[in-house]
Length: 375
Ligand SMILES: Cc1cc2nc3c(=O)[nH]c(=O)nc-3n(C[C@H](O)[C@H](O)[C@H](O)COP(=O)(O)OP(=O)(O)OC[C@H]3O[C@@H](n4cnc5c(N)ncnc54)[C@H](O)[C@@H]3O)c2cc1C
Image (cartoon, rainbow, N blue to C red; front, side, top):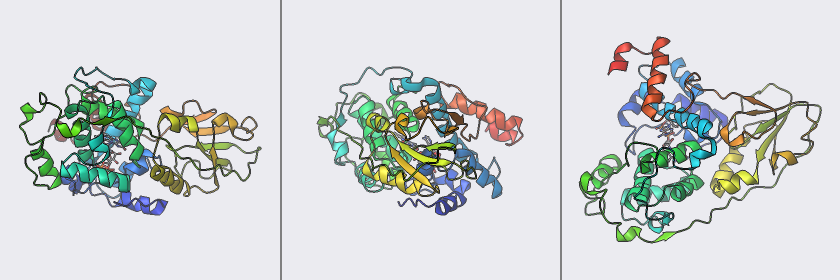
C-alpha cells in the first residue's frame, strides 16, 4: 500500500470512497477500505471533511452509516483522551489480572509467530507503515491475550511504525483488545484469520475452538520477550526567518492541515518537540511521512525544539494552534478541530453508548431514517 503525500491526491482518495462497498467488505484484508487514516491522524483532513465529501457526492447518511460509525470510533477515542488526559496511558476501565510480563514477544517483532497472515502483515507494517484493522486486532490479541503481555509496550511498538499513529486510537484500541477498556478480552482463532485474510493455514497455536483460547499455555514460540529501545530521529530546524509583527501559526505532527487559516498573513512553523517524541517515539519512515505532508503548507518552516525556544516566541502579536490533547501546553489561541459530532463529547464507558448519542443527534437532525436506528 502506497500513501501519496500531495494534497490533491489525498482529496482524490476521499473522493474514491464507496461507502456501500465499504460496508460489505471492510473486514476482509482485500476489502474496499479507505486508507485515509494516515491523513486523518496527521490532521491533514478531518473526519467531518470526509463525511461532507460523501454527502456532496450524493451518498446520504443512511447509505454511509457503517463508514460514519468507523469515523466515530476515531472521535470516541479522541474524546476519551481529552477527558482522561495522561490517565489514558494507564489501565482505563480495569486491570486485567492474567498478565505475565511487561515486554514484547520477540516473535512479533521478527514476524515469526508462524501465523502466516500475521507475519506477513508485520512485514508489511515495517515496509509501508500500514496494517489492516483486523490484522492489528489479531496482532494485539496474540501479544496481550495469548502471550499475556501487558498492553503498553506492544502498543508502543505498533505506534512507532504506523504512519497513522494516533495515540488515542492506538492506546485505546490496545486496551480494548486486552480487556482493559472493554468488558472482555478479544480472542481470534485460526479459522477467523483464514476467513478474513484468505489464508488456509491449519495446526497453528490458534487452530482451536474459542473456548480453549483463554486458558491455553503461552505457546513456546511466544515465550521469548524483549524490552524495546525505540528512539526518534528528528531533522534539523529550518528557520529562514520570522516576521515578528505577524501572528504565529503552530503546526504539529497532529495538525498538518493545508486549509487551516490559509488566507491569514502569518508565520507558519511546524513544531517538532523532542520531549514529545522521547515520550512517544516514531520510526524514520513516520518522520519522513510527516515532513512530506508538511510540504503541502506554503511557507512552513520547521523548528525542532521546545516551544519556548522558538526564536522571538514572546514577540508575536498572537499565536494560534489547533486544540489537541498532546499539545495543550502550546501558548495562545486554540482553534477547535472539525468534528462530525461536536455535540457528543466527554467520556463514555463504551463505544456503543457514545454511538447511541451520535445516532440520536443524527435522528434529531432528521439525517438518518428511523427504521435504520431500529435495525
Ligand atoms: C490494536 C489497534 C491499534 C490501532 N492503532 C491505530 C492508530 O494508531 N491510528 C489509527 O488511525 N488507527 C488505529 N487503529 C484503528 C484502525 O485499525 C485504523 O484506523 C484503520 O485500520 C485505518 O485504515 P483505513 O483508513 O483504511 O480504515 P477504514 O476502515 O477505511 O476506516 C475509515 C476511517 O475510520 C476510522 N477508523 C476505522 N476503524 C477505526 C478504529 N478501530 N478506531 C479508530 N478509528 C477507526 C479511521 O479514521 C479510518 O481512516 C488501531 C486499531 C487496532 C485494533
